[in-house]
Length: 265
Length: 86
Image 1 (tube, chains in turn green, blue):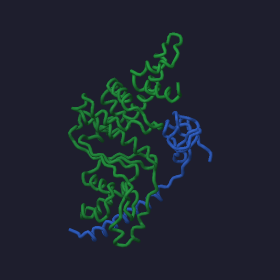
Image 2 (spheres, rainbow over the protein chains, first blue to last red):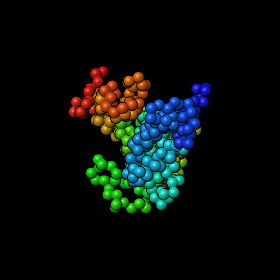
Image 3 (cartoon, rainbow over the protein chains, first blue to last red):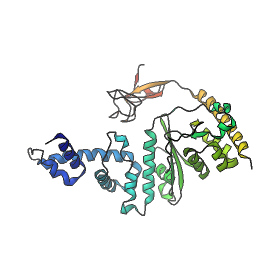
Image 4 (cartoon, helix red, strand yellow):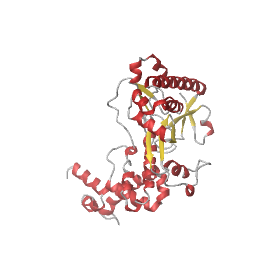
């Protein structure tokens, strides 16, 4: 049997229960364990590691849906969407989308939105820090260059707009916040806009006013200073002041950046 | 209602003021740091050790060879923490 075929057969067995017997053809039985059971050890081990990982990635969702539901859903997610890259931290981005299709959650889609927030925290944490621009250099630019200025949020910035109060729900499930909201008192119909970003060794998570969210969204979509002045008019100096003080804006460029992908949720 | 040119000028002034304030704050806040080993959660290390090349690749909790940067004097207060000599 060629090695490649053997490897594919084993991978299929890891993530598809009905492929165990096929992979077991290449494995000897030993002691009380059948060949299928011996392949099953690898399947259980891979699933166990990935389940532990998903539980650590989505701790609030785990609390919200319970260990049993989470475990069952995670196992079927692992089978249907197994890892495709060798770096574990890349795995699990699709879990929220997978939850959104679950029939049992159709009346509780706020749980899906919490899952998106938990992934956004993970993604922000695993983004490399970048060097901040020296904003005092802005005064050296010509009027034309100033109008064409574009600004960047931290590379880790995740802007989320949710139909439910995801920040409050998340906060209610944190042990270390003494003034956290009580989950029973949260209005699940309240929409919230949230910004998450990493600054050195700290992860920041904050709710945004609709104005701040619209402004940061426009900045993230690479609006020029002229576009921003048009859209936000005399609110703009204030919006920038708040954003600068909170470290939401990290750098600027004087030429259009066509390569930067827009990230919007 | 301000014209766009005036808005841009006012905005750049606001940015300049905020930038100057944050530079002043950052200078106030500069702290000495040290590398602290033995206390890092898996995947949360600061830099390479143990045969891997980069931050975030520590494979297990509290590995004595994995470290994070902390304000000076903090490490000795943490159970299992050892200051890494530069």
